Length: 229
Image 1 (cartoon, helix red, strand yellow):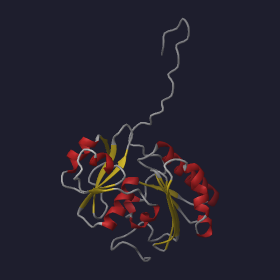
Image 2 (tube, rainbow, N blue to C red):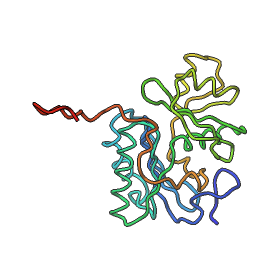
Image 3 (cartoon, rainbow, N blue to C red):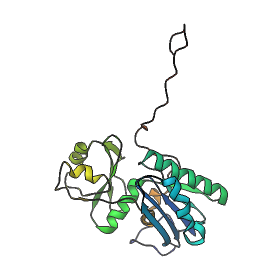
Image 4 (spheres, rainbow, N blue to C red):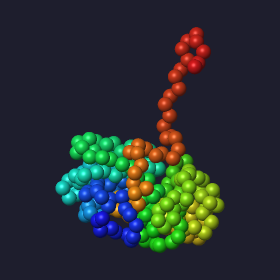
């Protein structure tokens, strides 16, 4: 059992020598190298856009060029483009290095950072979604989810919260309606993956969008003389 950060309880990295963590699901581009239960290198930058241009050079700045025995990547929910950039990079590196790759949830990651800052029994992770909505999920202090995440209007999210505090970049949309909300803004940080339990670090490395992407494939036009399909 390796040294752990963030209190008692098993962590996904207990039996893994080194892991590269990639987070590009939000406005942040964030990477971390975890070894022996500790973060030995990290980089975090708010880029809003341009994750594809920033990610690989950022990984290269880490110790040993970021090379690790496994890869953990944020699979969402979050930005459609950002999620795909991170997963594509993780899969490519995993093939090149011949190492396994797994996924983590952006909501669990921001919740882990939130609990580290403020120990409370229950916390809501709230991240910006599409069309003015937010992605929200409730977690206990042990990072057990209290149900699946949902894409909600800010008003519906506030009604669901009650007195539960919230953390994430989506809380600004809630505060626009309820200024006195017990909440603080934060973006997921790859380094906080060291705090996750095993159940939060074993998702398949494929996108978890939360809702259908805005871009739609065009419908085929009807051929002259034939009815549309």
